[in-house]
Image 1 (tube, rainbow, N blue to C red):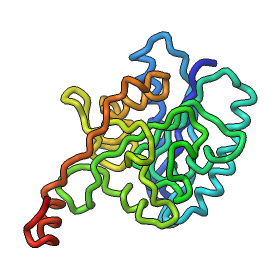
Image 2 (cartoon, rainbow, N blue to C red; image 1 turned 135 degrees about the vertical axis):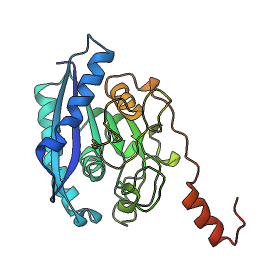
Image 3 (spheres, helix red, strand yellow; image 1 turned 120 degrees about the horizontal axis):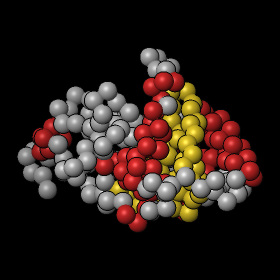
Image 4 (spheres, one colour; image 1 turned 30 degrees about the horizontal axis):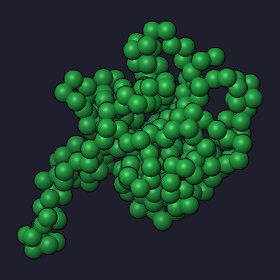
Length: 246
């Protein structure tokens, strides 16, 4: 088997169905194969529960143990495959713990809208992945009129998983999800959203970069550029500095 991509995501206990989750990797598969018609790509989903308890690592620890076991089994039966893990939100917390375990290895690890990696995993070199990639939409408050990721940053407030993989010092290959004029920007925390502004929605720059990162073309991802403050953020900064802001 050629390429295998595994999605790691959380399922909200309220108003979320498996049918809402499955389209994520089907869209990745369709995008990847359309761009590379000779590609042999299999996809799988590793789903875990989420809720307010995602501010702690208990669920991530339990999920990581199971996921690490699955990755070891996959390596045993498909030792020649190119394996990628695409993790979103609290799934990045879980997947990073799994990839830090002994005898676990993947070719590429992609984080999207990370709710934060555990405090002891503060470098991409702590993970057993040949390459680590990260995408993050602009952090916004839920009340902000600007569009962006309104929830990932709240997860990173937890002292148990505060590490933001998009930060330069982490050492990930960060990529843009802001749109490039042809492909759409990510405008929500979700992976797949009703208005098609999620990290794995069709025709987003994010989905294109994930497809490149997971099929051995990570050198082609579009680079991440830190966003400027939104008007609301700028006003708050100026208010806190009595109108004197850099």
